[in-house]
Image (cartoon, rainbow, N blue to C red; front, side):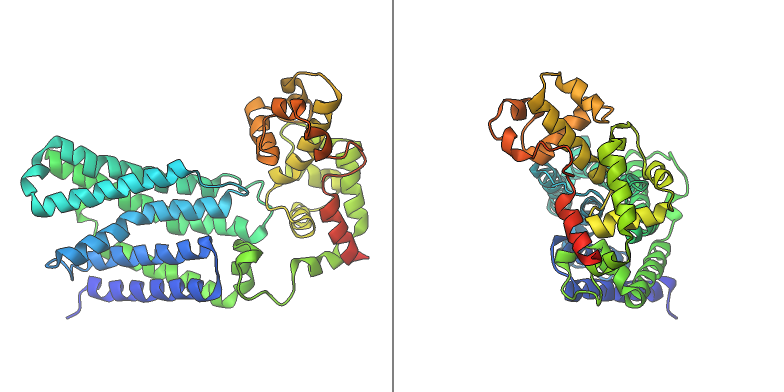
Length: 386
């Protein structure tokens, strides 16, 4: 008679493999590969729950490394999906490598020098700290999915944020959290939370099967939505109609009114300006404004849109006045000097003070206040409209 585990585990593996292959064959780039690799990591976890390789240290070691990587991979996926125009710092890669290596060393020591595992230092360095890091990365992946939801201009990505947080990242938090607490309780022979050991892995395997089946069905039925989540440059097969074609339906009067609000009335100088506020001033529905800014101007979040105006105005004022940087930052709509400095440095690769003192500042932007920082993007859109 088949057990529940022997039924759900193969089903979960089949759906994970299908999803991974779908990503590999239809997309290119780091994000698609990470998603496929995350599927492989989950396959490793599911195989461990089946206890098929308990007698093979080599197989268990490899599967254990894949399972250990899953919280870090889900964080990388969240970062690439939800943090626009940001690069992953080398220190992040080094941190991940150190904690993964610590877990690997811990398993090797447990196999070949089991007496070492009795020390508290071994438990803390190879078990507790790496598991805390895994929990921190997976929990932060959930936070990244929640942050920026209000400012996200990509409709499909806003919807995917909810699915990502609930369906993928949250379960990693639960699995890692339960594993960490049960390991801590077993090592110190205490019972902080009773009943955790009785939570069967079958539930996780069933959950993974259902979630991956859902994603696979969505991928086949709503392929255009899946394409929108990954930047257009990473898609192997372009959709039938492009973003620029959708600009044909945009009313030029709306674009002109939007430019008037931003350039003449300087609406961007209002701290805390939201897309809902802007939609109200334009007398249009919020989702339509999101689509307008995203599809015709190529912005993926509202902060990018505002920063273009704010940094344009600030860069001009830095060259034409001797006002303090903090005063300029507040005047163009930033509520924090640190946020302004970061946004400015992201644009120019130098601080506002360095920009003011640099000869390149005078040629970085036109000082004509009537030239929009969106001019190149607007020109492309209006070419299609006219």
